[in-house]
Length: 261
Image (cartoon, rainbow, N blue to C red; front, side, top):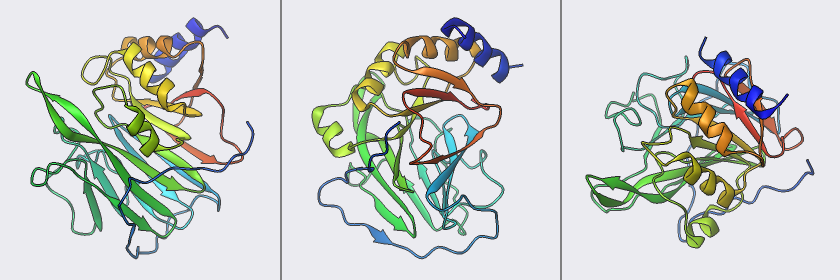
């Protein structure tokens, strides 16, 4: 199927490699915080795999083999049936965070810190580790330093990066701290975060095996993002919002479109 046909198929559907070790690198000086997690009765991913479900906008539900779950850019209304153990948030817009966190959610990680000016997190629950890399956001014509975070989720020997509301290219220091990312959850709106060509540059900087677009508002916007990803990445359109990854089945240079954007 030609790329243009793939793009059209993605829009219509949504709106009507070699084994290596994962090497996500933590931010220097942080120490993981160990927190016990309650067991879950739901069906779990197989050992050595991690399951992602696109909830919509910028929110994903991440589930591990040991029953730990997390929701990205938690906003209180795009939520799974079962409460997660961890939620991460960014505050560029109120669709990316909530001030009202159910007390049953054990860990709420905000990608900004109004008191200290920088948020640093590193939390491990069983087989899921979550940490963040602070970045900047535009703010009324200026720059709000460390106002956004890239959150990284490590499970099943895989590193999943969520760019949040990223507004700029990454520095060499950012890339060194970030390490190797296998699956990248990238905003594809083309205006509120970054233009499509600039976002494609960020993805080229990070060089993930799989890119899952998020934070887009119509088929045309998604199509422009997919065009910007050519020719390096092929496009695959999923019939369901859920995908399971393992080190053995990880695609190479693939944009995976999940319904629900």
